[in-house]
Length: 144
Ligand SMILES: [Zn+2]
Image (cartoon, rainbow, N blue to C red):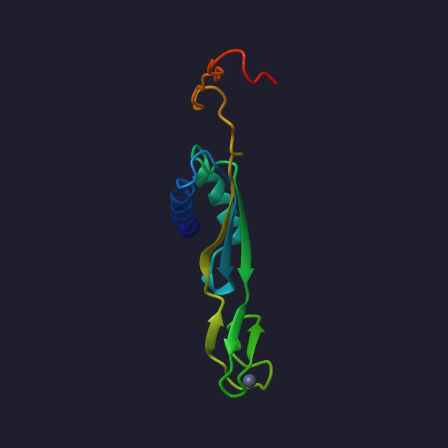
């Protein structure tokens, strides 16, 4: 399954990133998937669940944002979104526009990580400070 190998590489990349934040939980992972990447969103989500079971990413949400196809038209200079590659014509002027600027993406857009609150470690870490005893000076003086 094509999607499974994609998801596995995403899991690897995210796990690597998350490892830099010990104790943190990955809440969600956003992907940018171009219309032309020929990836089925539902399959990605399905594979995501399979691939994350038993990993630190279990329970993290996968958010798939599809990226529309954008062609650049050399004739009029417009970048336009088009429905599909069946007709590579500039919607603006009707000329042939075969310069794909966007639509093949398959990348991690962002990773949302839940870092644990900075905890005040009680007891163990804090050095024990002996309560300072007032140094006994010549007793009778300077009593406030
Ligand atoms: Zn044009």
